[in-house]
Each structure stands twice: as structure tokens, then as C-alpha cells.
Image (tube, rainbow, N blue to C red; front, side):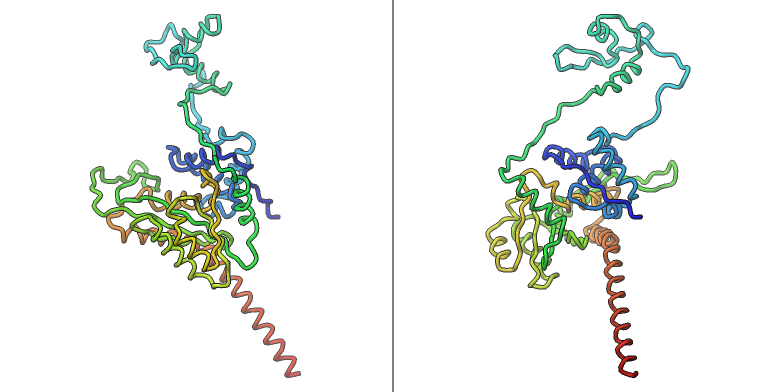
Amino acid sequence: MRPPEVFVRELAPAEGQRLKRLSKQSKLASTRQRAMILLASNTLMSAPEIARMLLTDESQVRKVIHDFNRHGFESLRPRFRGGRPAGSRLMTKPGSSRSPAPVPTRSGCPTRAGAWPSFRGLSGQELEVSPAQLGRILGRNGISLQRIRSWKQSPDPEYEQKAERILALYRQQPKGGVVVSFDEKGPESLCPKHGRGWAPRGRPERHRATFNRRQGIRYLVGALDVHADYLRIRPRPRRNGNSTLTFMKQIRLAYPKQIRLYWIQDGLSSHWTPDIRAWAAVNNVELVPTPTYASFLNRIESTFGALDEFVCKNADYLDWDAFGYALADHVRHRNSPAERERRKIEAAKRRQRRAAKTTSELKLAA
């Protein structure tokens, strides 16, 4: 039996912004992947769709979603193993030869990473404990050394209405319409970028350390057909209203005029120029805005995360032709499952038509 679909719980705007930041800026590949899984699930993508997009296993996708729903952001941290071997001697403060650097606390008084003297003063009793053991005690109580972070709340007064409108379009395709998720990524430049890849043990792939950026930049403009799961993307030399309108006209040509396009996009000024509004009103296109500071509701954001991992990182393209070839190869591979499904459906319809034609011929012959 096919397992039921699971989705991430409803995210607050601050949680969505934090996941978006982790999916792009985390130093750990596992954390970036888990954040991308949760962002995609937040836009109502099913586990098989997410697994196909990120080239991972469906059970892993479901496990990440379940863990986040139960434990929150703590589940995004990888569970590294290791520690002091059994039977080894604990390093206590009297036997320690190095003094840890002072760390400020919220109260303003400096403590130390080893925390032996300060820990004794705060607890009121003298304790002999190693710095590593003290770290484990604090970790079990949910305390860790952290940097202060900022938060961002959407000031949009229509946040709930806009979010519900977008999620409703994701849940069910409108009759006689197509839902398109649109956004831009960049700027991208031609320079070596580190990443992950398979290589012989002890012989990792290496990139040049010195380079010049003499070939300009590109912006990746993409449109995702949400229900067909079909991605179209083009590199553009600049980002402005004319470039956006040109790309929208190209996407409009891919569908018959009588089909209405529901165009989901953020509030960037170059996406809402008077020319774009006038063209959309004439060409049967409805512009659907995402709430302010809530671009994580745009489904193509998670697609850009996968594209960044498989195309932009771990690469050193010499010119834009090589970059474009790699981009087209990735998009072709990504769209191939949907293409196979369409071919299967078309083949089944052809078989049904042939069977109906053969049946009618036999009846006429009889």
C-alpha cells in the first residue's frame, strides 16, 4: 500500500525565513538538504516529488518532516558521533594546563568555555568536572554557546489571505488554468565554487584559487508549472522589468490562449511594472503576489536550492556556454520523470483509440 503523504506543520513567517537562510548559508550539507526538504513540503510538494527533485530517498524525506514536526529546528542539526573513549582519564580544572578563552554571558559577567571556576561560583558548590563533561551536561539541558540572531516578521496586513490563496492554488489546479511559480536567482558569475562530489579516496577535486571575473554576470529566471512539475529556466544578462516581461511572453506561448495562467511571484518592483500589469490583463494572466517577507511560500525557491547544489556548486565553468549546457542538462534530467509520465498517458490513450477502432471494425464486419 502506498504510504500516506506527510507535510510539514504550518510555518510562522520567522521560521520560513530561517529555513530559507539555512538552505543557502549553512556550512553543513545535511542541514541545507533538510531545510530544502522542509521548504518544499511547506509548498505542499509530496514526498516523492521532493525526493525526485533532491535526488534522495522518499523515506529520508518523510523522516526529516516527522522529526521537524516533533522536535523543531533541533532536528536539523546532524547527530555526530564520537567523544571520550571509555576508561580514559577526565581532565579536571586542577590538572588542566590551558585556560579557555572568556565568553560573555547574557548577565554581562564573563565566563570561560571550561567554566570550572564560574560554574562553581554560580552553583554555590565546588565541582570537579572536565570542560568536555560540562559541555555534555549543558547540552543535555538544552544550553549551548550561540550567536545572537535577528528575526523578521511580515508586516503585510493581508498575509493570511495571500498565503491561503497560494496554498489553495497548490492544493488543486484551477479548472481551465495553469499555476506557474516564478522567481529569479542570482547574480551568478563565472568563478570556482566549492561543493560536494564523488572522487577517489584522498584525491579530492581541486579548483584554481586565483581567477578574474571578466565575463559579466547572469540572472537565472525560472518558471515552474506547479501541477505538471515542469521547470523552464533561462539565464538573462540583467534583471529589470523588460527582461521579466520578455520571459513571461515566452512562457505564455507555451500554453493556448484560452488557458488562464496563475502567475505566483514576489513583490520585487521589476515584477510589477505598469507594462507587466497591462500585458497580464490582456493575455489572460492573473498575477498572484506572495506576502511581504514570505518568499518561502513560492515553490520554485526549493527548486533553486537543488539547482544550486547540482549546477552552480562544485564547478568551474570557463564560459557561459559551458554553464548553459550544464544548466540545460540538469533541467532536462529534472523534467524527465514528468515527460515519461506524459508519454505513458499518451501511449495508453493511443492504445485505447486503437482498441476502440478495432472493436468498431469487427462490429461492422459482423
